[in-house]
Image (cartoon, rainbow, N blue to C red; front, top):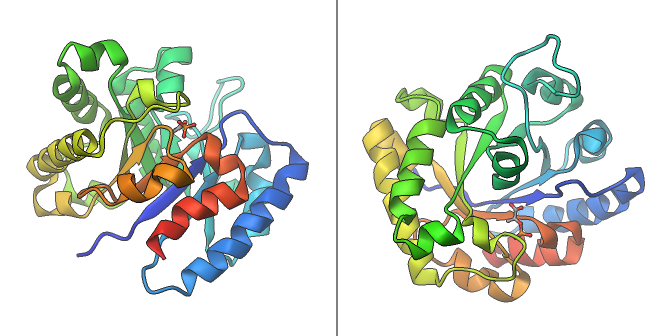
Length: 254
Ligand code: PEP
């Protein structure tokens, strides 16, 4: 099965209701991309406050709306948290789990991220599971070790059916928001490693799981980064806040 590329925008803690204009520009661009030969899935993950409104605006278009996090449980006494079922009810069809900013700011562990990915599956959401090493870990030659540990600990289980709603995002922590990226060859090495590990875990189905690269993807470097084998798309932070930049990245697949 050929893997369909996916470009997802992570708006982080940015955006107000007025930002729907930016989403509308993304929707218009994605409409024309949808007519090109290579199809690319386009996902926008705004803050939780905007999900319902954005999902309404994106309904019936080529853009899917996603959340940036979810709680493992479906409901309960967890002030401030949002369940995967609530995201789905608001119109989301995807959710990012395990972003390094949540691992850092909220002490999220691999076990918790696995529980969130399972919650996403339970609610019928695609889970974009983020993994990636810090600068110190890369400099210390620990990249494979760290990535393997996060993959094994954060992905739901070995059941190949579980792989169907999972996307892995390899995001070196030091590349996020820094303007720095690994060399394409280094990204390829890690993505090949992740692919092999997914195939050990899920068997042949491991070939179907999309592996995104994330970390300072911009229109200027997207072509080189997205051409790397086993890079099936991008998770885009800063550049996804600007419709023209985000569409220029997704448009690489045109
Ligand atoms: C991200 O937050 O997932 C990300 C990749 O950010 P940026 O593109 O800004 O580096």
